[in-house]
Image 1 (tube, helix red, strand yellow):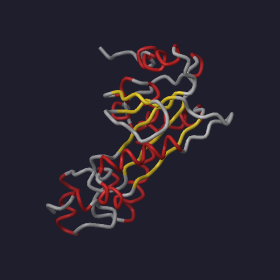
Image 2 (cartoon, one colour):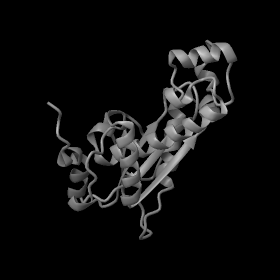
Image 3 (cartoon, one colour):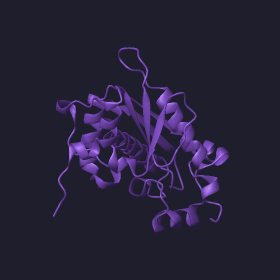
Image 4 (cartoon, rainbow, N blue to C red):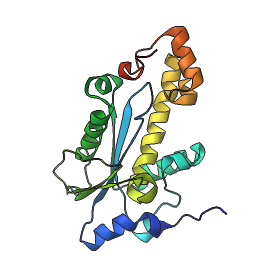
Length: 210
């Protein structure tokens, strides 16, 4: 039986923080740590958490269909109190490694948030087991994109944004199937590398064996 979307289940971390007096809670996530090509994209979002403002269906972006993701992404961006997205290029990934590139993108995404009333975010929920170099209290949630509404919202807008980028790159570099694989190392992608070599958006540190 399909599990019904449960708002309060997704808001357990947010509600606990609200009970401690926090108002502006940031959810942060990344998309694209594993691909052989393209940037890693990090998103930070502050969502309204009142009952009437909740968006049904927000979840880990990987669990949501493409069409539903695109609809949710537009709704999240429309309703968000504030959101930012940051791309960290394949060149930077090669220079400082993917973990540091992800932390850098998350830090820049959080620091780029501008709230409408001029106040600053108060606490950050990050996906995974990340400690960011920021001046705000932070709390890491393993599988946070599935367990936290705010992190899930960040994962969805980051995923839709990055997928759109890779679709555009597919037109520029048609030999690798980026529109299908989004830069991940599928058989067709690897075959493209073997036949045509690397293109400018390939991560050199991820493709040494090719």
